[in-house]
Length: 185
Picture 1: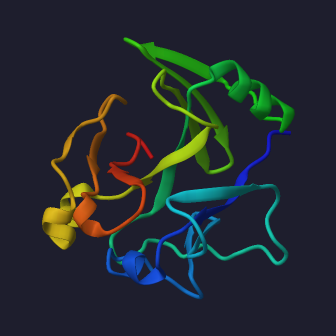
Picture 2: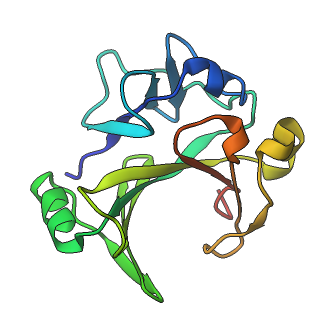
């Protein structure tokens, strides 16, 4: 059985997430059964937890005031594709799909409610690291709430979906994007 993402650690202040319309309780944002724990040392996404639900199982927060209803994917960037894929396999994570777009190599696997996207970049130095998170939301409503903190809405790579990134003016320490839901969901 493949592991699931049960937690993500992000070194941002809880107030910064609350200002973006996330419901924050005790420095934690619950989205679709995944605990995003805020604060701590470092910058950006500093870690994740793979495994079963904590005991007792969390109650989903539902839709947040900003309209976020789920995590679409988390991005792991690496300069060493083979070593990263081997390290993931040692944790029981086998990529289920790979794709190439020009020089970009990507791999994907669903880990519970969250898709892990592994991105190989030749210019990435150092160990593999988390780069960003993408949430599912109504982009029109979100844009009205966030104003210029949300970038231009454009077509996503996935058919029939749109995406927009959060600008640096939002004050978060890593890349955040928002996508429309998958068609038919």
